[in-house]
Image 1 (cartoon, rainbow, N blue to C red):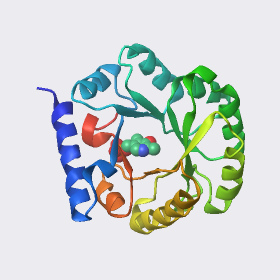
Image 2: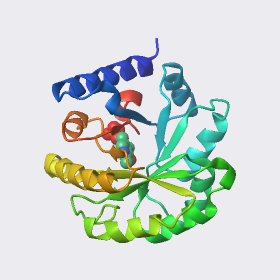
Image 3: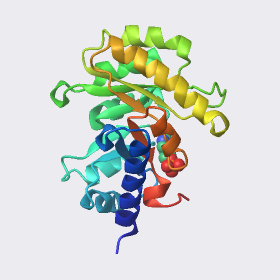
Length: 224
Ligand SMILES: *Cc1c(COP(=O)(O)O)cnc(C)c1O
């Protein structure tokens, strides 16, 4: 029947296998289904198959889908795309998590614009771990000032880190991210999330400490 349901089952099995290989509990890695460019009806099919965490990259597209699917109240929506400062209000008002924060200005705006009644907005700092000039993400050197800023943001909840390593050095980058994550996890009680691994590299990411893989293509098929 639905390819999406079958694909989801396969991805869940892949995650389980990768956890087993490295003696991790299968519940220690969460699956974020990345639905960018796909219609709300695809999200609904994944939801019917049991999926609850969804990731979107484009603000307006995400907000439209969230509105269309508002009856599915237990979906957790994650924003994972590059953030322009004039879009922070929409993100703060509609999403549950933001994984792509890489500068203080964005933190400050999200904190000011988060409606109190929605509770705290969960934040992961995106790290440009491969040091690519073209990629978004903060450098490791910028992390202390970002965390300093986060510590005075009452409407934000610091949950951890996200990275999109370059293909060539993914394993080394995953290892570096794991070190960064463990360092801050020991200092911050709310830090529990290391978001890394996509359709092509989820096994390696899990072997190197990922607690959340972000999977698009393997669930919803190729994007146009
Ligand atoms: C598109 C995207 C993904 C999913 O990538 P796939 O290769 O389709 O699994 C994961 N993370 C981010 C930040 C993305 O933009």
